[in-house]
Every structure is written in C-alpha cells, then in structure tokens.
Length: 357
Figure 1 (cartoon, rainbow, N blue to C red):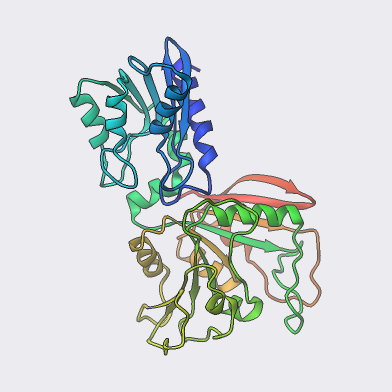
Figure 2: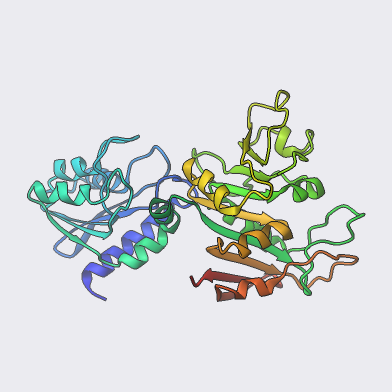
C-alpha cells in the first residue's frame, strides 16, 4: 500500500463515523497531511453539519496547526456550490491547502467535475482516483441515485429453517429471529431513506416501519411506502395514524383521502399491477436514494422478477414455524444475484447477496 493509499484509507475510516446520520448527503472523510504526517482529520458527521474538508480545517485550527501547504485527502470530490454549508472548494483555498487528492469524482449534476476543475483553475494540484472503487462502494446509494435517478434497492427477508416467513395465519404474527438479528435489521433500516411493504403485510402485521435503537441524527426519518393498488390499507393502522414518519401509499386509482393524517400522502400510478420500475422512478424523482423492501412474499417476488434488487439480506432462523404456509422462494435470488457472504448472529444465519447484473 502506498502512502497516498494509506491516507485515503484513513479518510474512508473517518467517513464511516457519519453512517446513518448524513442522508441524503454521502459519507465523506478527509485528512490533512504534511510531509507524510496526518495533522488533522474530519468527516461529515450529520446533515447540516460541517463537510469533511471543513471539519478537518477546523480540527487543524483547534490544534494550532497551520494548514498552508498541506495536502488534503478526501474521499469525494469537494463541492463547489452553496447548500446548507458554503462550498468546500472555497474552504480549501482559504486554508491554503496546496494539493488535493480525491478518491471518487462526484457524479451529482450540481458538481460533476466542477469542484476539481475549480481547484485546478486556482492553481492547486489535484489528483483523482485514489482507492476510487472503495470510496464509491462506501457511498454506493448516493452514487447509484446520481447515475440512475432511482434508489438502490435492498431486499430484507427472514425465514425459518425451511423457508417459512410466517406461522399459523389465524394466530398473531410472532417474531422468531434472534435479538442480534433484529438489531442488525434496525441498522439496515437506518441505512435506508425509504422502507417498503405490500398492503398484505400491513393488514397482517400492522408494522410501524420505524428505526429503533440507532442514532440517525437530525436527518429525516425513512419514508414508509405501501403498495396498495386497490385502497385496502386500514384507516386505523399504525402507518396511517402514528405520525412517526412520512407515509406514502401507492394506489392504482384515487381513493378518499379527506380523513388522512398530515403525514400520509397517496400517490396514484394508474396501472393495475403498478410496475416496479414506475415505483422506483417515482421514488427517485423524490430524491430517495436507498429503498429497503421488507415484504411480504409477493412483494419480494415482484422486485426480484423485475430484476430490480441490487442486494439482499436473508436471515435464516433455526426455528420451525408451526402451521405456516407462506414461504420465501430463495431460488429466485440465484437468477441474477450472487451470494457474497454468510455470517452467524446468535444462531441465525445471515446471507448477503449482491446483484451480478
């Protein structure tokens, strides 16, 4: 590993400190270096907070370390526009940084090479592409949305040892995954800008689809999305009444919404089966970069059949559910997806699959 790669890897490590808290912004880390020594560090910690470059400069100032003549290693091309904070290009130029080493160029139309060009035009030396693949992987959801204008889709399913996802339908739904698996599931929710289920799941389970036990900072809570072609969602279910997070109900035709709570919005896509690509286009237009598909079996099947799943997390419990008839067809994952890892969580087996398309 070269010295430059070592510094960039440290910037990647720092960027992780903002996970769950910066959406819709990407995870970004930065280190300031002189003569091979790291002088200051920064990362984008939460939405509305300092960007990584700005935090690194502030870190240097707090230590009394001059920034003139330093090299900044940053995982993403510095922004060159005003948003919640001033442009990072201006901050780097003001600080007298001599050279900037960039991991990944920003494909966002508001940047798209402009940051690097601005710095070069001001006489700064700029290097790009250092650990580019690792940097892009860390901010995969952001990169995917910028390029495709659709959210990156993660499918999450839990089954018993023979593939059942539910027990006796005449009995209340029971949890069967381990506590550790449930904690991991909450982290996946926290990594998502929207969580989607079919209306049958709402009728059967009355889920809240909220993030619990994970600090997501001041960012918006994940939007809850329900596919409900025929307007069957119960008016008194949690998603329609609790006000805990925005709820988006996708329907094939207009339904009475006069009694809906302020957090509920109904969207009409006038097609009987509501094609998955239309759903993703609509969510992408709303700036949703990451979508977690939580169920049920029909909804999983629709997304997999459409080839619209980018990755899947399958939790297999050693439990055997009594009386269950609904199963998850795991063979559908083998069409266009590759098993990348298997881990253990308090007796449960956690499989991660990635799209091979």
